[in-house]
Image (cartoon, rainbow, N blue to C red; front, side):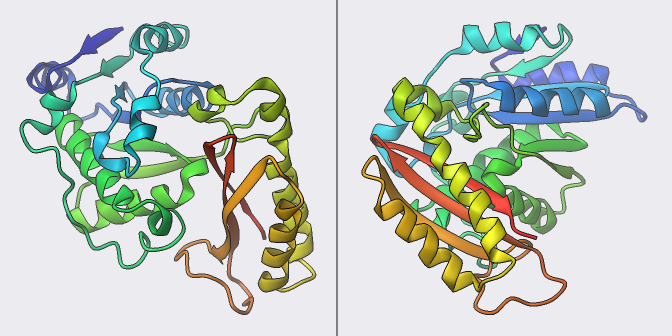
Length: 282
């Protein structure tokens, strides 16, 4: 495994490896790796000749500075974790100064409304920060494919829109959510939960599963109100939002339409830890 911390070094190395028939994949991460991340890496390995895993905690996507401070930095552990999968991975772990130089600011994008709902509504400028760092990583690595988890489904659609608008020849591949045995979507944030609440947090996925069943018989409004009522009875959980939207546009559903795919999206605070999840409804 090779570790690079400077842009010019990884660019130089990749230039020596690339040929016309060589495919390059990238898995962008913020570290604190878990099985969800590793599933993305395995998928990339199965489809690409060269795989780059970036490890970078991006400051511009945090609207809450305390959340940024609390985000774990575990590079040595992450490298050991990746090494159990493959010794031929390339890891890019730059500093903030290396990636942003003297301009730690987000670029501004027009994502045609994809960024104005759900996460975009509750996390100001979050997606501008995400798109900024992803565009920087893509310009450095120049991958053919990039792998993202569907737990951050809204982010996945925005990255696809970014590639479309910037005309980057990159295939964006969404990978299924990996869950803990109790159904909780895997996240680096889960480690901040006490064991008892981590177990109880299975309630989030259980509620989504029941909502999916109800959605087949009831309106979107009914399902949303049902979910809100369920969380009002749970003192340990603070529901930030529950939304049912068209899968491809993220437009909220007023009336269900035939031949349209829908997803339910949820954000919940548990003991001060913010967890998100989503589920396909049809």
